[in-house]
Amino acid sequence: MRLVNCLDIRFLGGVREIGRSGVLLESDETKILVDCGLKLGERTEYPRLDQIDSVDAVILTHAHIDHTGALPLLFSLKKLSPNFKGVFCTPPTLALSHIMLRDSFKLQQIEWEKLGVTPLYGYQDLVECLSNCKTVNYHSSFDIGDFTISFFESGHVLGSCFLKIESDYGTLIYAGDIGGFYRSNHLNPAETGVRCDWLILESTYGATLQHLSIKQVHNSLTEIVRNYFEEHPHGKILIPAFAFARSQEIMRLFSLRNIPYPLYYDGMIKETQKVYDAHVAYMNEEVKNQFYQTRQNPFLGNFTPLDTMEQRWEVIRSKKPAIILAPSGMLNGGWSPFYLSKLNSLENLLLFVSYEAEETPGRRILDGEKKIKITLLNDEYEWSEEELEVKIRVAKIEGLSAHAAADDLRTFARSCKPEKIFLVHGEPPDVESLNGIFQKDRILKDAEIIIPQGEKRYALKTETAGKEVLKRIMERLDSLEERMSRMENKLDH
Image (cartoon, rainbow, N blue to C red; front, side, top):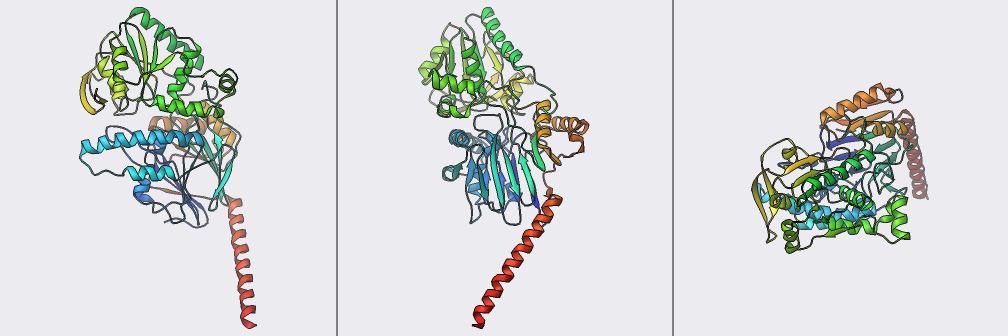
């Protein structure tokens, strides 16, 4: 049961874990849900939507499935209030969500069929949630009940934002996912200096004080590619990557470095790249200048799309070297499992550049498992399951993450000057490590650091806010008394 005259917070997922992000914010008058994601693995996990009766709005920080994937389920469960205002996000997030949620639905259907369970939502729920989306640009504010919400750049992926949520009780910043400062080759860094009373902050890399310098990471990646082809002149390099953000980072890097080998991209990257081309205005100045002044595409360079099975097999069977970039980054969908199946020999290299969640095929390979199960598309574009004995060479590039390391998270938190910090979106060792770093920090040590519990409610109100709320109540009572007095006078006459 919630307390009155305060901001009530419940974490529906993303607590001591990465995935199924979702936070319910509730005032006396309004309920909003911030993010509504999935946790991918051997079996998909959903946020605890049973803790919600209804919401007045949903706010999305970005288009990654761990922040958006359960949105159709929310609509299927009819968790919307009669005064539902819509789903709010930036224009790039909406465009990317059309692609990502459609693909997620296909993968969910495969899982439901394999498990023999009743589908949790249908096509119409997907259509309904997307048709209820409304876009808001950075630095714009809008009201949902007694909340005023503003979007700021978070530097994580195209269109990502952190939220400033103001109410009579105080100001909350929900950071979503924060990118490392000046690590992206096409995005602006996260904005800083937005003040708040309370901060909800990710801790994905809380145990990593600093990533390797991005120049060093880029050099390592290009060096691995060149060295590999010197030793295996007929080999292929398969790079499984997320359908957007990581893919574009690599495409831009290879274009800038003039990688002298045939470059190909496949799957949803072909769709997401169109969104990138249409939203260059949301990128950094260097990319905008290249795109608008020279009319050169900042990402495609010498990359060639693969559209047909004939083209795919031609590249696979060719004696020429090739680099193939394909989703999914965790080998749990998309075209990357197909290429893994066909290129599974010692002559070829599987090069990981993304985070690999537990229980995914990608994580199993990195953990050294020699036999894994993958779900892949066949020549007839039908899904099938295959048990694979891993023979392909394996390598991983560290430091390409779109998530900030602990030092940058500390810089961001310092700039917000919060009284309380909630650490979410991280595995237990990362959450505990970031907690320790903050506790020892000369600026943040005075803030209360909280590692939330999933079933617990958190009631927030600043001391000043309590006085403001009381003042508003008294004003409303005075107004009500005045209206009643006018009504009595009319009755007397």
